[in-house]
Length: 369
Ligand SMILES: C[S@@+](CC[C@H](N)C(=O)[O-])C[C@H]1O[C@@H](n2cnc3c(N)ncnc32)[C@H](O)[C@@H]1O
Image (tube, rainbow, N blue to C red; front, side, top):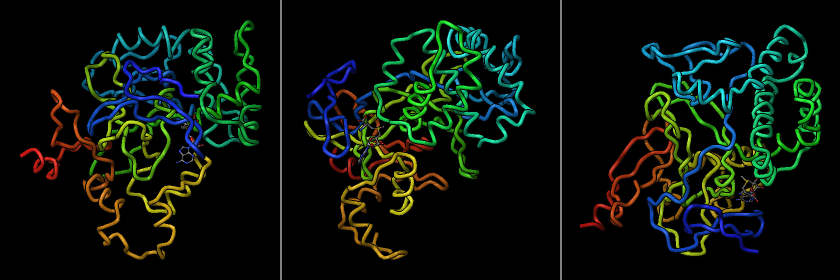
């Protein structure tokens, strides 16, 4: 069955892709640089463990922009004092959504376990999962139909997820309002969906390192339908730091085409940084997403001897792709995609989705002449 993707336009449609489950294909001929999806997060939550509570002057607990000492309107939640907001507007938005009275009280209850052995027997990841379950339950309270959208995503609980769900249920269920309980099974389902479908919102890039850490996790149900390819024809952008404090939509995701895509062809993003070597990609895709990639690049690289520098063979399509579209800036290796076309004229400037670097696309410049 072919279903039209519920986007604002008819650029994409969802369909079954052999060996991959559902996927997204071009519903018409599409151009490099075109933004094919813009989406706000259904769920957005901090990637910091609960203990110790986040310190002031890190990032806003609603919009996840950095809080700078120069931000004079920063406020902490007067009830819990553990959540910080970059502006009164963010605080006001949060009290009606991500930091509702129920979330605030539930977080305070969880923080009382600071010195107990309860969480110490579990990895720090469990504390982040607790944040996710609070966020999911909050969604369930405020917008029950959205939970169905979350549950429609790919992912089935395994034993490790069931163990996590049992622990989190014992801890959090006493905090659930009696009329809206989440069962162990539902918590397990939600954790499984989150682990396969959430996107990371990262700290800003710095050429000096250290590695960027993950600031928040976000679930975008439509963007979750894109499958992976090690030579993707699309990539995701976000602009968390843009806009003034309190200005909304800075956590929206944009999926932009790297190359032209003919009608009917699948649009794929890469779940790992495209410059990663074969064995690293293979490990991440199996450990984090549960599949083995069978793309042409993987088939070729699987036969390369370890350490052999076969990338000098410039005729291979994926080598040409990497040469052109991997950002060369120090400590980056993000993916470059052309800026969106203006008045149907393709752009000859490419932007890195990781560090934001802009560079001229010499090939495009030549074809424009
Ligand atoms: C974020 S979901 C993508 C949408 C998913 N196919 C669906 O049906 O909802 C990620 C999952 O899709 C499947 N997948 C994505 N890319 C794949 C690929 N290149 N080969 C095989 N399976 C893939 C894997 O099962 C993976 O865990």
